[in-house]
Image (cartoon, rainbow, N blue to C red; front, side, top):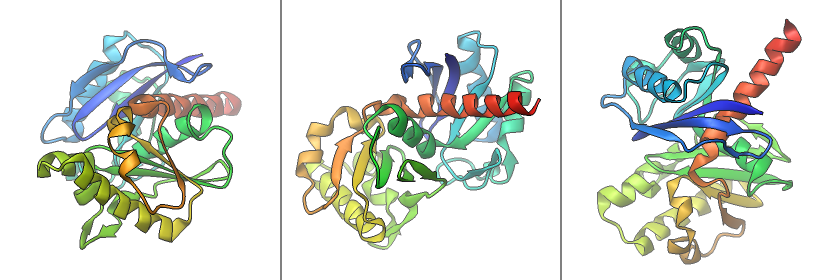
Length: 254
């Protein structure tokens, strides 16, 4: 079964049809740059561009880098503040000519995909998926059940939002070596571990393609740490999964 997924990020917006029987992209993803400023109108136009690139007509799942409840975006740390309080699901559905749209937190989407198809498959206990990119997204699972919208990237670390020190953007902006950046990531993981005592950390985002650069440098964390298996495609797959679940709910209700 194929459903379309779109992953909105602070620097790029990417999407593709996802094969949910296999848990992978059905076609090579299409990516456009996130407009600056990342206003609702500008980003919505990019989402339409990505979906139309594939001539897709059907349900669409969309991730957003912030808290999302009932299709409404509640926070927007790395996006334009105009997103706060917007019924994003309705906005995007309207821009797509009435196609049903499901919106969820970006890291929650990535986490759902990793728990179902990837590095967290079959794992019980407490699992935390962290997506390292422009910011730090988080998805918390207890015995496979998601606790949505945790946003652990905004925990305080040395007087700052953790993502301001340990995200990939922080590494790039600060010109940090892999060693220095790994030390910051370690401090962040130690803080999260103190709060939640997870059994497993799954590290996602684009940096998960290079785990050998930094994971061996992280010490002193009790929990197992592994790279995301779906890497930077996890958000697209998870968004498609959410859209499929929403469509199933509509079908059963109607």
